[in-house]
Length: 157
Image (cartoon, rainbow, N blue to C red; front, side, top):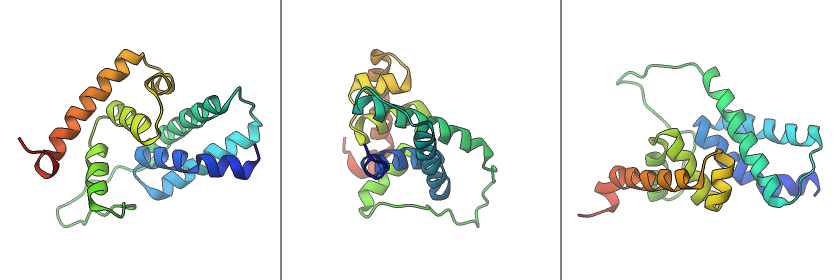
């Protein structure tokens, strides 16, 4: 595949994963560039597109994790406005995204890869380096936590 075609094919996947980890547009863009720079410098060869996608996802996760501790921890005061760098057009999507960001990392990762990247349970488990049964439990618990977080706005008893 040509460089432009690979970037065009996987740009949304790499960027959205980077953003979900870093929670910052600037850092997500840096991770995005790092991932594709590594990819093209190494001149990697893959068995198939599934293998290529898994490598890009795993590398994005690794690069984003390395970037997180470098960001200074700032304590917010009541008078400081908390703004988001990036928002969806539809408010309901923002609510779901904000709720997902509140989840523990293992649940957030499972949800993101399974629902937003449309990976199968086998592929998601492989990328996260966990068993499929563990992934299914994490997805179930993540959905339960999301239901609780969104209960007032979207679910009725």
